Image (tube, rainbow, N blue to C red; front, side, top):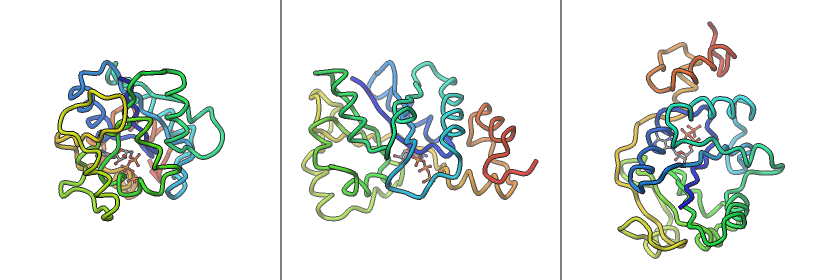
Length: 208
Ligand code: ATP
């Protein structure tokens, strides 16, 4: 199974890393690809440049050999839609199961993704229980989730949604950026290499 975990990673933090490793453990996968959403189409422009976000992602992935920084969107042009990435990966790996990892907060925005109705024919979804109370979903989305939900890790190539029950860290990139700008300690939430990179490059309004 190929596992893709997309994110803006502005910056990548321990919440992302712990989540990625939880997925590897739950599915006994040898690797998970962290796909930098180089030009995220569905949210505000990232604060750090694509180059900085990519460098930080590579550094964070050095902490465990199962983490692979995926540069596909870095080299492409145009918006970083998940469906385009999935089509590319599926074409390169015919017949191989692909899973897309997403937090239950981001899942609420799924209907706004490009060609979201085609997503489930290309992959399975692994949903991270980031918000303890679950996501706030429209009835249509909830129906869609109920229809595709599976209670066991997948045996089919696509079309299923698995809700991972592991606890997630209460860390967000927004919180990290705010703490950095305010000069508050945030080292615990970042890989030390990423923290050093931020300091060295004076990112996020850090002033040391
Ligand atoms: P921001 O605060 O800027 O919105 P973020 O912390 O949510 O950023 P993203 O790069 O936007 O980080 O997230 C990429 C994916 O990782 C999303 O699916 C998101 O739900 C998930 N994610 C982010 N933080 C965590 C966390 N602490 N635990 C589990 N999943 C997370």
